[in-house]
Length: 176
Image (tube, rainbow, N blue to C red; front, side, top):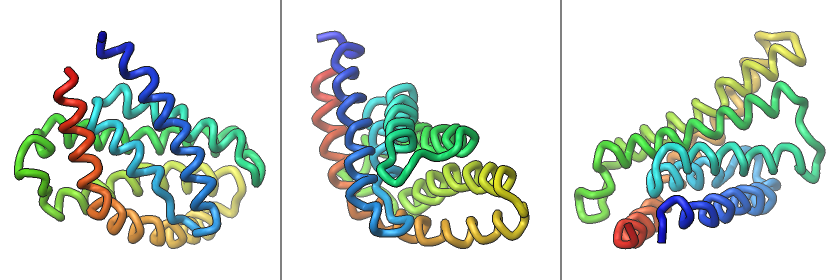
């Protein structure tokens, strides 16, 4: 089967997974598996599928959030920020980290990936949020401090779920 055709349902499934996991973790402030899911897609299938999973999944979550949609500028920042995780995952794929080390990735690489994904999301979101809702500096600083919860949780989530990524990557590699 053509790789592109095979990717369409995978992108759709992972985009829906973002909505479901966001809803499931909505009671845990700033603890979210979205970053890893998008990173996972980028690492398993490449930059374009990773970005698409981030854009579609976060777009659906932000627009159809049961707690109410975000403003348009914040929605754009969230969607763009989430797609960064797909790029980070694709870079891990490009560097060959998934093909080496028998499923063990250096913790420094996983921690760096978690940091890049988290900062890549929260920096634009906090900037836009502070710009739209003012006063800029107090809101930006408070948002940045609040995002530290997500940073710490992602630094735990990425190493804990890495084996699942490695397993999917090996399985998907056999299909191409």
